[in-house]
Length: 86
Image (cartoon, rainbow, N blue to C red; front, top):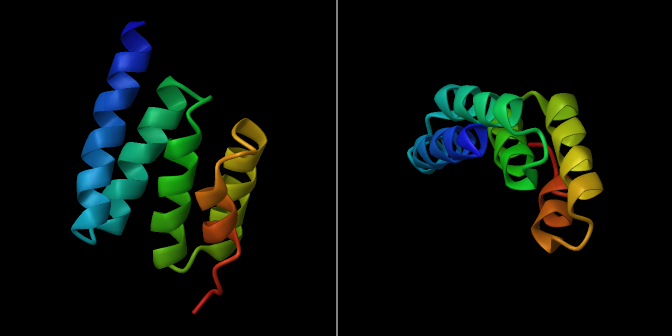
C-alpha cells in the first residue's frame, strides 16, 4: 500500500512538471512512479508524452504500448501512440 501511495505522489508531481513543460523532470518522476508501481497505465502514458516531447519517439511508443497492454480500453493511449512525431 505504501508503494502505491508513493507512486501516486511521484505521478502527481510528474503531472505538474508535464503541464509546465519540464519534460525531463516529468519523465524522471513518472519513471520513479512506474518503478514503485509498474501496473500504473497513466504513468506510462505521461512518461510517453514527456519522451515524445523530448524527441525519444521509440521509447515513447514502448511506453504507449505498455499502457495499452495494461488498459486496452483507455482511448487516450491510442491517441497518443498515433500522434505524428514532429
